[in-house]
Length: 452
Image: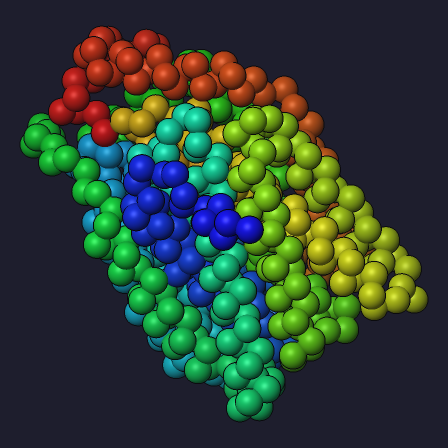
């Protein structure tokens, strides 16, 4: 067997650059996994807030509030990054900010709700904005023929990072006996340092955007102008807009699972090491799914791939609802459903990012991925907050019924999107930009020095 065939970078003309881009995906998993999904969410509820019954609602409010800040800033900062050629600087700047704030979470403890909330809100803001800027490099490190494969490589490297982090967490819990929630603060420092080390390849190998000419007026005014120009062209990008609408709805469900995974697992009786092992299994399945998706999504299309994985999500969340109703359900059934959730999570993530990349003009990638990030983060703010309130008011059954509904409605909207037309609109916009032609649906001309 030729082991070289297993190398995902084999045959890529820019393998080192793709690897560096994927390493950032691997690095920031320490925040999304250890801080959001696995450890800090439960630490916040059980240690910082304590057992007064407000943990679910407060965590939903803190997470949702941080997402609203991301929503308010994503598109404007993306437009600014495109206009000034600052994408790489913003990617690294938000990453370093997230590293410092993540390590600072170790300063929290019982009754430090305000401090913990402030550190998490600011840290999550940095992390989520960095995700947008990272995704905006996807059209740069790929071509129209391999964008799905490249997206899958990055997503898979992220899950490889998550797997390594989980193995470390399990090992240290066993060796050092840190299975109790109140003993998890050293993991927050480790998460920050992991992120810092993994950023280095991106800092060294990702290309800087070309320098832009000075623009009249303030940077804020120019950023608003670019966003307004895009809004005026919404008919041109209507297929991408329709996808983002469906993505917004099913994003409710994905964000809920990310934010409440450990809390939901704890509600079903998992704790300590068992909880980490459950998330480990989910992560392995998600990583396999992301890797396998890269083998076929460029052939069958992103839309078909997305609808297939939404079907997996619907079945998995309805099964989870069934377990909540059937109180005597065996424990193994939750482990099986966890595999389905992981499979849907990995495949849907890489396919969604590839869809946006296909339908995005390269010269406006940071701005358009800012819209993508804004949509996903707004979904997080609304979905997580509503889920937390429904969970507290109606219990797990009502909340899980809401969760399944997110995926059903999202799939119905995506089904009406025309992927091919969306791709053609983006390519036509690129040709007009290179030729310096007037912008359709807008006014005036966007010459190269005013574009991204």
